[in-house]
Length: 210
Image (tube, rainbow, N blue to C red):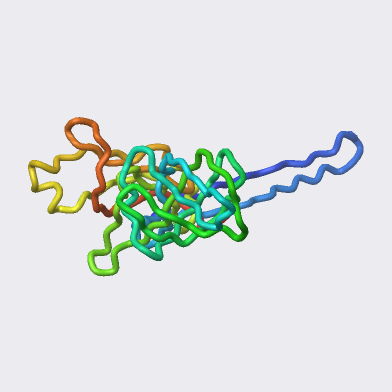
């Protein structure tokens, strides 16, 4: 396997003419090996859903309403809540589905408040297909190990989506850094859609996680 090596040298000399000059060369080497990661190496969370919430009458039940897209959640799923106004407390909650755009979570203490919020959904790969779901709003995909520089990311939509003309999608890995990238899928009318996909990220790294 080909390696990229970095070599540094330093030379020390005396400023006194009557003193023997000693030259020392210091060499430091580091190897950057090519590395490829796939979705099986990463961790994933959706981009934030915009939402509102209410908790009235001194209840511990917080009703969350997604403002734009169906949440796609099931009973017992986890969400990461960010309450941007009102008195509810940020954190990770277990949800109960009310309908396709509303769900409830349980607060640690009674509340009488309302406001705006966002929620993100932790996502895992499908154990049968090995694919990820983009969950309409798209995913933030974090690499298992840090790359030395932003890698090249290739997205591979589910073959069934590609072959179905009614599900034609646009997609691209954006905001690619040494540690993560973002991906969203849209249809021919630029509407965000939920699609299954896999990916590969290829670049150089030393195997470190920092």
